[in-house]
Length: 102
Image: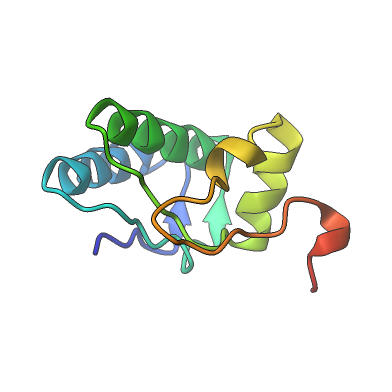
């Protein structure tokens, strides 16, 4: 299973995007983002691009529970529902700040 490193920012988003797209093209239906600790808006864009690529291939892509900082960005940009879709039996991350336990 493809698993990005601890950072997903503008500094490495192109490479991480490319690697994730290759994994999806290779048949993977899940990407484990649980170790991603440092994010910016590029992380959200990358996950959305992966989701779009998977859909174009007819694959349900699961991310699992998003790290809190990534979930907060998704909430801010109004795309939480897109990233937290229940797919392939994946658990759904909390979608609001009140649902999360810190």
